[in-house]
Length: 486
Image (cartoon, rainbow, N blue to C red; front, side, top):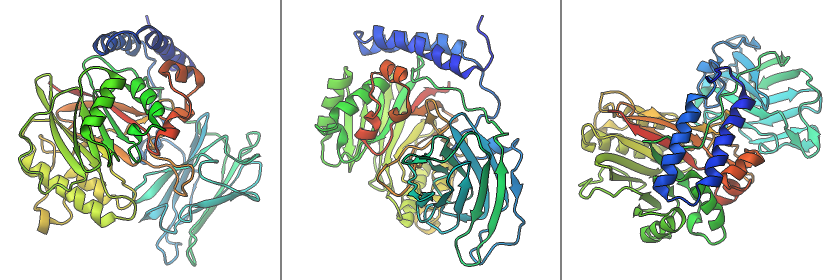
């Protein structure tokens, strides 16, 4: 009988024993045989997986997992400045690898664009100061880049509350942030004139948070593996980056791929490359920089019209062993283009309302570039159209008259959910890539692959190199395994 105690180290070892068998013993098998045997072993593994503890900490910008956390303290309400930022509740927790802070700003802001929050933190060594809107910081006399201190915040869209994670190995050069388990002293300031100040608060490492159980990359039998991947400037077809992509795609072994940023390559060329790397027959279609590639054939004749869809949203229907599945591959406008992204989201909601066939499941997968107003995500999930004069009335998009579901995949061995990071960018890691789906008709589980944080033994099992995802693209591959609900 399997023990049901939560032992993360045993859990990881357990995964790797079986994954090693698959990685080393099944590479010579064809695609179908390899997946069948891998799925069988995965079922055995799932049956013996230790149960995860309640309310594990996941850094995704939702706050249910903070409900049981005692606050570090509260700043009085009503003492904010003219900016409207008025700090209230502050909480902190930690895992073996991270310090995570939750803070309520009392006002909806875009954390990395609007002046609203400066964090000051000391933990036995030099003081860290980080201005989120200026996207710059210092650790003592040294500059503190977000990548060096392992800083990530969620949500990436506008909100009045944020989760902020820092690596416990944070350092600027040879200067560490956390020293010898010293208590953490935290303060927060609104940098606007007359802005609110909260703290100092003391965190004595007394709120250890259960990290979520490690995920396995193995695909369960009967599921459909979907990969969303922005490959950065035709990267999957680039001679300089092809080896990185080949290792990544071989390790993930998807059935359907939604590629973005393949502006200058044909669908036929991408199809041929997938057949070369992954074996079997593939089918590919392209629109703008979007290429959808599938082991399953496309259904001809749908859609009859793509209006009012923007060209950066590409719909296609697949025949999945006799069942229909619609894949919307998307690459929404980047950066400060809030109005353009909202227009694209409105068009998607209107198209689904008017043209999605009743009872046919669909997914929206891609680089949605959601770094601005949270309203865009609300529209995509709920069908709440902003410009009803142009796009018509609101309508829930799922067949059962409910919103769509956000899969929110997280990293294999980490609470993080970010899908983009660039060590050269001033912007810190964020969740830009999504898989959204009809949860009345589909079940979904998934993960994000970041090879840079995987241990050596797991890299060996996956036949990856540590910097593969970093060298391949600024986006990480996002994987979701789907199963039809009968």
